[in-house]
Image (cartoon, rainbow, N blue to C red; front, side):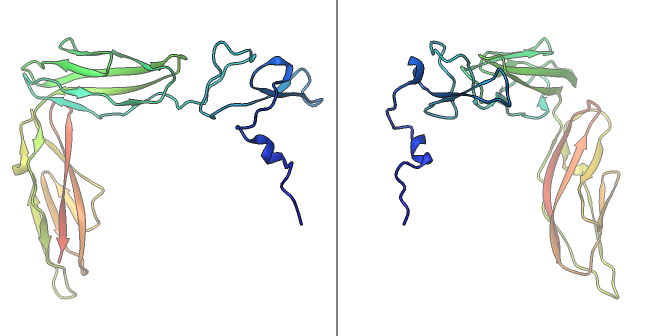
Length: 242
């Protein structure tokens, strides 16, 4: 028979009222090791591992295990000619609040302390530059992201789901779809691309071609279009082999 009385783990409970050593509140013990000459190890009581030693504490150190600052990357941003901006960044982590700053913004765009962008785009389409946004906490720890801005109105309309009958050992069946009729706006020459297509699908110019496999299947197809400004946008639809 064994007893749990006095085991080491019970001594680690944070609700025990043990007397402080050396008159320092929160200090449980200090240990020196001959393997680490000149180093003193302090065992400290803390309410949480996500904590910082208060500035008025007699402890000879200050530390934090708080999450580092982070900014959710919104990706490239498109603003229509003469359009207004309505983007607010999402942030997290850090110690003591975050300070947001932005550099590289075009003259018509600004960002406030909360990460909200405001401005009215010019009438001319084109790449508007890359903004660098930085979030810094009270300890000087920071995170940053880059956002490419475009003045453009390139977009997809809804592409309906497609289907093609499967091939057989005697008959090869195929299908095709022109993407150009589903693109609105933009500037200059359009370029099209398939994103991770199945082996039975290919793209030439703006036309998708399908050589149906001999088994039935259904795949989500993602397509991308870009224009003369450098901006690109994607959309998805389903292609079923019946």
